[in-house]
Length: 406
Ligand code: NAD
Image (cartoon, rainbow, N blue to C red; front, side, top):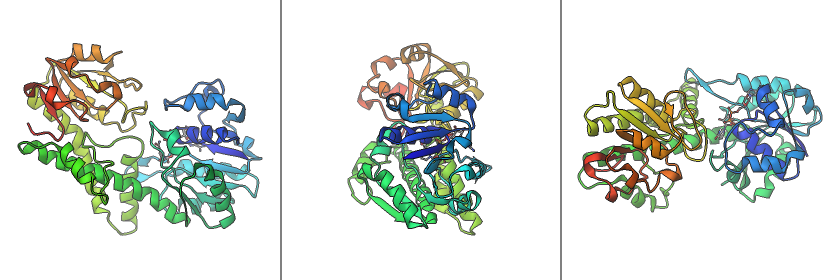
């Protein structure tokens, strides 16, 4: 098929690469001309494992442009533009602007909404574009996005027109994953329900971590492991830490809460999850201060800037909030991350340099290379915000960890 992909960020580029690899011809559109020019010269704007290789391998079937007119003969176009939350509400102008521009599509082509949007948005896209619309929300995780696209846990296809739904179903059949056919609104609601539920799991275990820190002989990892063995609970998303960040959970939970309020309903559990999460960065700084006495004029090393490992994405990263608080309290902050960068701290080029120069260390992102560094941390005050260190190798006088008794 000839397929359009509108919005060339994490979701759009991964979708483009995977579908090109399946033999489809892809026209990728983005309003950011620099990004488009870079992509046509082989410059990939983001780090995602395997993405560069897949785009390079399928170069002949991928074309990037800033001109919507180049979509005039595609059979199907995905909308993968950003859907930020502004003042607590979902901002849909990018989606609707894309829908308007997609009036260039052939009359019988289909628009597939992959961006995360609140219920009834896809229906509005249909009205604006005058084209049949299918809601096909994306569940990929940055850091394993290609695998998640090729082998997702399930695929949701929301449609009013069965034929349009069948075409999208056919497109994803190669994954072998279960495909659920739903209404447009159900598809949109499933995505928010899933993200909110996952955020709840993390906030819940983070509150249990707080209790463990106040009790003798308790480690939240033991608790999480034990409850995770219960099939009704499952072991996933029970890692206590510094809270969730990134480009999805923070904006989606907020948008969901405000969407519900507009319907005259409250999502009190989701509101609580957000409230718990907002406290997490402060907790890491408090722990470090309790260890060090004062952090004023001290050099603090932050290990990990990306919101999670295997990505360079720092959107809503907990690390940035921690750096800002450390700086406000008079510390000099240096940081190291294998992929991500920030202007908020002095970035150094290795974890060794970062640790050696510092008085105190906070581990914020659980990159693989931060495991097994206990020896390197000797003599430093350390807060393990992601539980990557072996507690038995750490000197309790200099060490605190999320969810661990002092
Ligand atoms: P992103 O910010 O990385 O990329 C979005 C791209 O859309 C940008 O390049 C932007 O220039 C472009 N764009 C904006 N308006 C446009 C328009 N009118 N026409 C053409 N291009 C336009 O976003 P992302 O992280 O890929 O997320 C895209 C959507 O997918 C969001 O709704 C997000 O919630 C959802 N989603 C993201 C992830 C993830 O892990 N990143 C996972 C699942 C779902």
